[in-house]
Length: 273
Length: 253
Image (cartoon, rainbow over all chains, first blue to last red; front, side):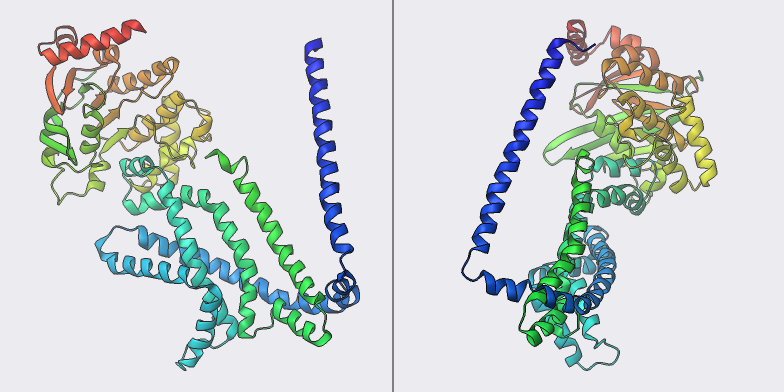
């Protein structure tokens, strides 16, 4: 049987909780309602509703935009896998201490500096138009492939640094302990340091992938019919921006779930260590 | 208990500095087969550095370290091969947090000693059981108490059948009520004749388990001998001062 004091304390807690919920509800209503009122009563709202949120245009254009979005998804999936591998290789080269890898180490530093420093859109432009201009046999000319390569080069530079930060965050005692049981430096990295590092950097890695999911749209400057470009084409034909809103919704449909996964990884479970 | 035999680990005029700080200033120390040597001295006197140098985790500046008569500090000797013949237990356990207790014990067996998975697992289970950890094989380090973690660490260091075990203040990070179970594990190893170099703050334990006590002061071994002599009737002024201060602390607790 709970004591009176405990019942009293629990009742007070419930009152506080109810009051908190009421305040949250009222303030949300005021803020969102105010915002909605402001937009809906704005002088241009009827035209905006017609050109950006036209249900008929949305219905007509959505299947085409969605079909084009499939290309974004494919590019994204392939690029993501390649980035995970290239980024790791660059990070490992940069971390290595062997004199034999010195030139590679130098190269990896230059690579990260350059490709992290050039705007992604510029890189896509340079690679997408520059590589075919070389007219070398064997080099890809497909703009989709070239665009994906540009994204991979750009993002791998970031991801390499994320991996490197992860490796450096693993306590030195872990490496010592791995060496003490007789492992080589390489084995210590592979079995002890890297597994812990990758676990730790999973949230920032996924965060970079949310950014990549949207940046796939940049490839449109090279011409491939991905979602953003398809929406632009329909927009030019109909003089209506609704297809772009449809494309935006499709990007959100993949970025928001990824963001929730990031939250979960970085949440109470991920915060432990 | 076996009687001490020939020298297993020998340090000859070993020096080590970290920048300007000269941590070891000419260490001469021998640990013979089946012998347990307790290394005592104040914090910062160089005990940890000495053990890390012996396991080749730190490179010494001058002198020689020999294992079974072989100069292991010779640049031509592979440190990896040497470490496979020694075991080191760390003050802060340094267990691998992403592995279970059993995997921690198995890792060296599998990867360094080339045992099959089945062999390594059988030995891992046997060692965990021996150190009172039967049933905890699948637990991660963070779900074990400090005493249990340190016993896993001892099992891990012992799994590679080392010629000698180096123990670095294995009870310093533990809550007082957990010290006993770890010391029992060390006592157990001593009973079966393990050659050990034990850096410790536990004077009563040093007296009980060690065949010899060496007192390290400002990077030198100032005095060494049987526990009864070094701990009860120290000859050197520094040893007397250290033990007096130490007894003061122990009594005030």
